[in-house]
Image 1 (cartoon, rainbow, N blue to C red):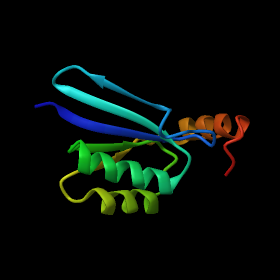
Image 2 (image 1 turned 45 degrees about the vertical axis):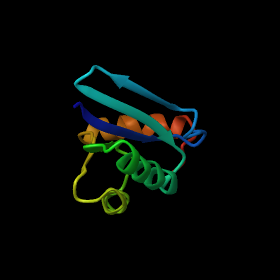
Image 3 (image 1 turned 90 degrees about the vertical axis):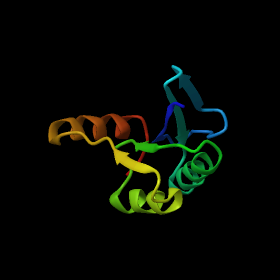
Image 4 (image 1 turned 120 degrees about the vertical axis):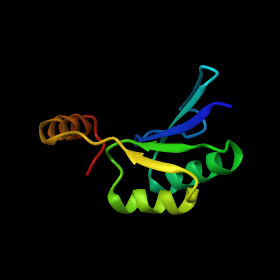
Length: 105
């Protein structure tokens, strides 16, 4: 059986049913889904936990601590939840790029 992980990221123009993909090596299955916001992230994470039996959820840096806690509650104790975070300079570069592209906040 493969290790199964879901990566979630945000984009203001995302369509969670279209902006997704799967990579399957046989031993590792990774799904990536781009969502518009937190409500969709919780929905998608919960669906993958129930339907795919994922082992982990990986989140982009745009998720706040409160968002992470809400996703963790939605997927349960059998699913690991982690967040990709940048160092200080990297975080500023990433924030500037998102602002340039109209992500807001």
